[in-house]
Amino acid sequence: MIDLTLDVYVAMTGAAMAAGFIDAIAGGGGLISVPALLAVGIPPVSALATNKLQSSFSVAMACWRYARAGLINFRGYVWTVALVFALAFLGSLVVQSVSNAVLGRVMPVLIVAVVAYVLLSPRMTDADSHERLGRRAYAPVAGLIGFYDGFFGPGAGSFYSTTLVALRGMGLTRAAATTKLFNFTSNFAALILFALSGHVLWLLGLVMAVGGIAGAWIGSHVAIRFGARVIRPLLVTISLILTGKLVWENFF
Image (cartoon, rainbow, N blue to C red):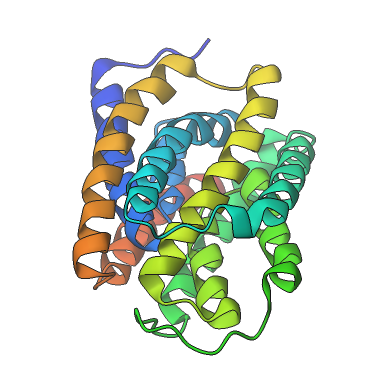
């Protein structure tokens, strides 16, 4: 049983709100929420599981907002969603076979790698461009990201968005909208398995979900109205601060 104080709940709700805001615009909200959960002493698998709970709510809110704006083609991605669900479920099954000690050392490295990816990835705009892959050819790409999301998660939204822009030729706002559909699918698949395995901290996750929903509502509103702007510097700065703490605790 993990005993958490009131200030931890407040801090985690704030982190979830920031994560929901960033995730709704550019993806990568898990780069804030997962390191934050780890930083207050939540075991790695429980941190991933609890993050899936709160993130499912915030991503669902963003997905609903984008759908209302007519930016998501649900019918066109039925098979992609099915593949993402299956591989995300498999990823969450695999991660539970890895010990907390190993995850404690691996996760900071993965977070730093994802932050580097976000920082160095090409600048994206709202203009549609030539698609390099059709929907069917893109499905395995989304499926692999879904596996990663089930296994680890932080940065998955950025991976979905970037590949939809680079491979499907979508503008960033439409890519962000489609990302929410895939992100919710992989989050929900992982959450089912984590819940059945007893790793979810339900009270903390639901409290964080309140912040995540609020952040996602604001973030999706900003993205729909203004398009994605300068979110990367904020994302990278916060992520590096939190990750620095984790690296210090696990390696020094």
